[in-house]
Picture: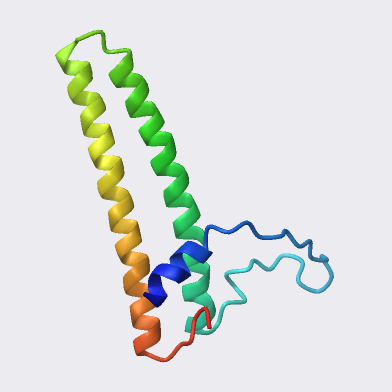
Length: 113
């Protein structure tokens, strides 16, 4: 149940914070992630919004193809394949994030506590 609430909390809007260019000029955020905890957090924060955006865009595109098919069986098949692949892809990403959260709890990385 904790995993579900963590995934739902990821969709809440967050504030954007600007950072100075001082001493960290030229360094990327990935260079600063030295421990496993921050690396897993970074992967989760990138994967979920990207996957949701891709799924929404692919569902809209598949719906457009299905609506504009005009009874053409090839277009209907193409639209159904895009829709099926989008849903399968999202399930794979959601399961991988769930596995990451499960591993982090198992290894006591204490992510999102």
